[in-house]
Length: 239
Image 1 (cartoon, rainbow, N blue to C red):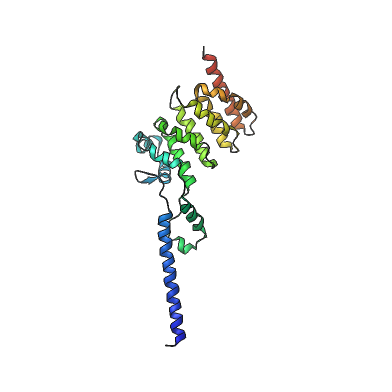
Image 2: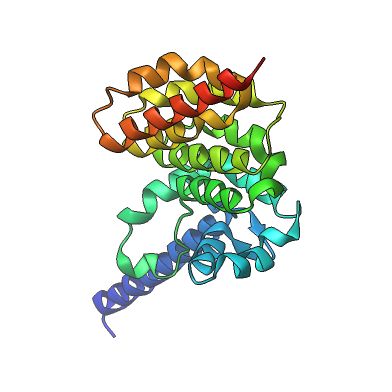
């Protein structure tokens, strides 16, 4: 066997071993970099959301909401779920890798999806989700519009189930008011349609609702008209 042949074989073996080493390192790195999203009964928020789509409201309550307060801490965790710097680096690198390499690695977790799904699941829990309201109010200022959309819908839906008096009404209204000027129509609609639910504190929204009567979206304008009427009815009934 010639020297050149041996050198070529060594180079091939070295290349294969280097590739294998890189693959092993990549798999280990993905395992370290990947942060596990919060789980309840072994399922992630994504898995619960997919399961929810195939359930009736009663079936969902039996599987999830009827657990009382048990799922709430898990979903509150989900509302603030973020990737670590290492996780962000992995999420950025993953789509740039060859498809053959990605096949051996786990797909990065989407933290925005986890936060949005957590808010949506809490909205389905009704009054059981009341302990999560402080976290949901905090999520109203999330930089991602999808999370603000889910949180604004959840806050108003849960408030509807809590009855007439609620100690956090003023705090909730203060956090909701800026969203009445959000660039997303769905967020504006969530807030404008549900702001009247927040007791006496809802009167602070009257000037904002009057401005919403000129909103470019017809549904938001209709919601503003209804909320103003609801607030005025409550005001007139007070001695």
